[in-house]
Length: 363
Length: 217
Image (cartoon, rainbow over all chains, first blue to last red; front, side, top):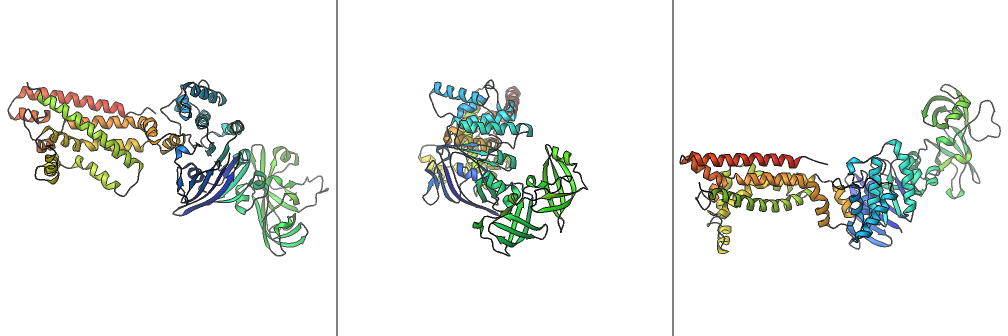
């Protein structure tokens, strides 16, 4: 199963121009609100007509503006999980799921509904109405209804945004399992970083109606293609500098805020001396040097600074560090036990290392 | 007592309500799902019968359907006579009751979430199936309430009916017209009975409409 699309759509003050192909995997469209994520799903499914472009599902062209192809929604065989699930309020859980079954054979239909209800852990709720069940149950009912129609492609529009924080994590794991059971091509839209990382085998980062990067989650998280991608992916430490020296793959960057920073840059980037560059390092990749141990073998990019504040975030703490010559602000994320062990608190002066291999130069 | 006015009122109201509902459904459905240039104008036109005097409405219809108008002559050639027949009473009732059905019907259709209809389409349903299994069941309370109100309005039609159908006993005299006649001729008994029937009926209708429009979901 596969999906390939290339779409253009303009509105006053906003236009979208995107291209993607996906195989049997879960691709996450990740980006801020208003970036045009849901619009893409609506165009693929046929709810919104693109101005121009092509959509191919499983090799079948379902939309082609130049060829005059526009297959109606009902014949596209695309499953759509709406943000608020769009369960039919006048039908029971069972009736909702049965609505999606394409077979007209009664026994076959009942068997399929029963099977889906078991897989989705909905047994016992056959006669309940949507307003009587929990958010998670609603989501699973909607998913069962969609899967009952045996879609070639599954589109999931912010499937967890209507749910409580506590149940989200479990339901994300559920969704990942269900996707393993029904390995269709799936596109999931989210603005939640954690969700994107947890569910996306591939991530497409979208901003202002355009993809800024499409790649594996490791690429997006550790090797962002643009400054925006770095920002959206939670790489808070982004700095500008100028190439000061190149020795093979080893590059020295002169950064007004942090001083001279050394890093590795693949030769294919073809950096030249004097060229302005942007580089970044993730908050959890910054190494805090133990005051009692000295530098030891660590020698990369040592930066000294004062802790401005510490903020607890559950299992980790975030430190803000005023560092370097120009007082650059570094954000560092550490496990709580490290915080305790090193006795880190606001006002203390510490040394950190921005290790060469953890620095990424945005091409 | 003459039962003809009661019989005629029932016949006229049911016929008018059937036309009103059929045309109102089509129009409301079109207006709810589409945005078009003339939408506001049509909306205003639909509402007109609620605010212009029934006699004026009757005058319009008399002029439009009478023997001197092209439409009237055309219908005459087909052997259909509207003015001063019971059919005239039906036309008057349709026009004056139309907004009472079309408006709530439009609101009821607009109240059905587009997501629900799209969900049904994406599950492989044709437009007719979507309408039958999703739109109609979700809108039916509003539709039923509107239908009841339109029917009630049709039974009480007086002014426009008088203009178009006249007040011919045994031919076009509906209950509201008969009540007027009874009072004019001092037949207090007949007037009281008919007023009683209409009062009870109106109360029952409003009560039923109230129950229909209560939302369950």
